[in-house]
Amino acid sequence: MIIVKLMGGLGNQMFQYAAARRLAHHHGVELKLDLSFLEENTEVITRRKYELGHLNITAAIATRTEVAEYTRKPRHVLARILDRCTGRTESLPSYIREASFDFWPGLLDAPDNSYLDGYWQSDRYFCDIGAILREEFQVMTAQDQWNKEMVERITGENAVSLHVRRGDYVSDKATSEFHGTCSLEYYHDAVAAVTGALPSPTFFVFSDDQAWVKANLGLPKGTFYMDHNPPDKGCEDLRLMKLCRHFIIANSSFSWWGAWLGDASGKMVIAPRNWFNSPGMNTDDLLPVSWCRL
Image (cartoon, rainbow, N blue to C red; front, side, top):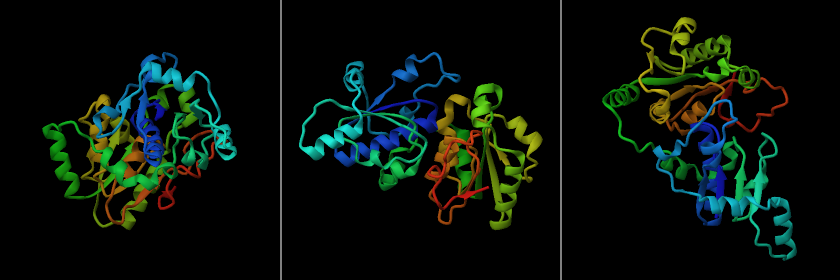
């Protein structure tokens, strides 16, 4: 069995699920989700809730007993691998905590009874099961009439998803200092690159601050501002976002997934060169090589 700790919003939870799903698939074992951090942690800056339940995922919720069993005596995965090489048997699960933001290839061959604690933000952890994830990351909840109309609109246009993430990236000092926001220059350059490369693009804007977008970005006439779905309906925006043919993403795991799930031929994805304010964060493995950094 593989257990993964879920943290953060929908995009982060998808990364965590994807890495753990790939490891469970590799071993042919069950995957379970530890929701204790989402349910019990009161110290995080922005409280989050479990959001994967809207998707077509194949995982059960881990019980408190199972989580306790897998976390009570942490044993480093490298020690478990050494045990296998030397023929020693050991029944204790491996507690695998992400050491840095860099891609760690050791996760791909981690033991089949492991607990994963990290964000795992690179598709190198799960790209070999991309077809499985695209099926399981289908939104299963019923759409209202507005969202159905937007599906028809997006699929009938040369649609470009443009995501602007503000929210706690702006309102909370600590979060702002760590993450930062994409500059106006980035968006202006990205829009210029798209309009110069694509015939008749139509922009569909996803944002938690549409008023700021309308006042500052100066987007072309005919732009659609996707302001119907409330914050607790992020899965609905994700369903619309991934239907677009091309993407301008923010430094956000949410729009990362919208772009990654998009499957249009000739897809163009523009992403910010600086994902964090911190110069010590290595994001070389975060973006697929086919995406353009600006």
